[in-house]
Figure 1 (tube, rainbow, N blue to C red):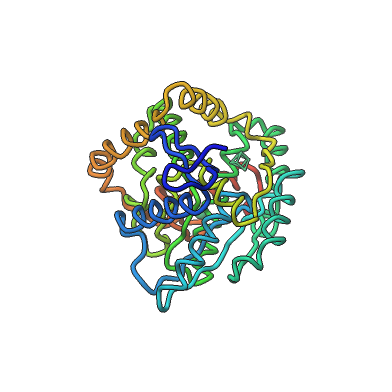
Figure 2 (figure 1 turned 90 degrees about the vertical axis):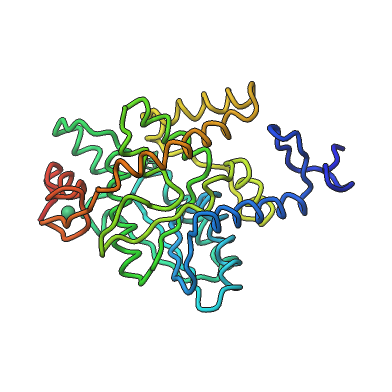
Length: 312
Ligand code: SF4
Ligand code: ZN
C-alpha cells in the first residue's frame, strides 16, 4: 500500500510534479483549496450570482456542478442552475445526458436541456451531412463549437443567469493554447482566460472557468469519490480534430517530463496580460440577423445557418 504524504492512510492520487501522494481526505482538501484559490484570484464571482453551469453529463462538468452547488450554499443569495446542450450526436450525447439525469438528485439544482434540433431545426449529425453534400469546408467541431457557445450564452441569459461557468480544465486550456499557436491565432489565445476578459456586450454573459488550474485526472478522481463517474464515451468526431493528437502528445510528454503541463499553463498565463492589452479594443456588436452578440455584422452561427440553408 502506498501511503498518503500527509497521513498514514492509503494514497489514491499521485501528483507526480510535486512527488506527493494524497489519500481521499487530503485529496479533497487539496482540490477545494486549489479551486477556491483560482476563484478568488480571478474574482470569478461577485456575490448573489445566479451561476449557470454548462454541463455535458461528463465527469468534468458534473464535478463542477457538484463543487459549485456545495459552495453556493455558503453564499447568501447565490444560486446554481445547470444548462445542457444536446447537439444531436448519435451514440454519444444521449448517453452523457442519461448520466446527468441519473445523477441529478446529487446536485439539487434546476436545469434545462436545449437541443440543436429544437433551436436550429437540425441535429449536428444532420448539419455535418449537409455540409459534406454542399462541399462546405468546416469540420464537425466547428459547427458544434459555434452553435454550442451561441446557445449557452442565449439560454443562460434567458434563464436569468449572471455568470456562465464552464468546466474547462488545465488540460483543455493548454490544448487550446497549443492549437492556436499552430494556427497563429493570438486573438483566440487572448480568450483562453480564467474569466472572459476581452468581450463586453449587454447580451454577453460573463464566462468563468473555476477548474482552470485543475488537471483532468483530478476531476476524474473528484467524480469517482462522489459517485458520478462513468468511463468517458468518445465523441465520434473528436479524432478529426487536431486537439485529439495534441492531447495524446501532451499526456506522453507529461509522463516523461512531469510538470510540463504546469509550465505550459504558466506560459499561457504569462502571455495573457500582453494579449489582453492588445485585443482590449475588441468590442462586440450585434448580429443584424439574430440580434445576438457578434464580432461582425453577422454572427458565425448565422453564417453557418445561411450556408447550411437553414436560416429562415
Ligand atoms: Fe462537438 Fe467536436 Fe467535442 Fe464532438 S469532439 S462534442 S463534435 S466539439
Ligand atoms: Zn446571428
